[in-house]
Image (cartoon, rainbow, N blue to C red; front, side, top):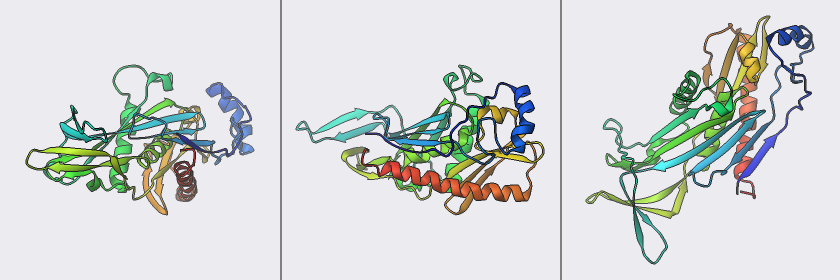
Length: 309
């Protein structure tokens, strides 16, 4: 059964954003009171909810909601072309063929693969259209892949079944079902939460016949070495800095900054152009990102240990 963990940091007071002109006309009053149009303070976060184990057909899954932004992550394991599944049935072993051929690379013969993919379908926002992946989807997917590789949160050696012969591939499909800002925050939180629910079956590999027996009833958890967490900020003129921006605030701002931390360490700073940021502002953002990262990781741990799971 899926388990939820959530926190509500501030209630929405219902002040609407109805376009750039309305936003600008309100901003002089709202910023002077340190209040944003949705009722939050400048550095206040929206409510977060995390659900794990929500997709029964996946090997690991999670849903993360940050305000109205909602992202679902599903993870599937694939191995070599010929797999023998060991079951408790009297018939014995069942032979199943999987279309994906997976072998380690010659340069890294003893590690497996983790392949994240970010999808932004038209249902999540009117600005996306059917067809090839949008630029934002490709940039987001590349950022997530680079983050997983550079953070060292997973030792890919544990995905190797037989060196130079066979390894697991973790296909991580991250789909946004409602885009209302801070997309990378939700994508990374959903991916890490889903990875923490993945279990790897025990595998016996015959080097002569190159067949493997997968024991579905003997599984071990994928070991996660660290837990990256992202926090996004938006910058406006006059040195105004806000945390956890909505989609409309991101569209109206002069720059966006995403900071990724893992524990007490700074993992990544992502700022694709826009207004400059002072050193003091950057340090304040990093400190706030550390506190929020700890909060998100505690929520994931709470969801995993929930008795409802």
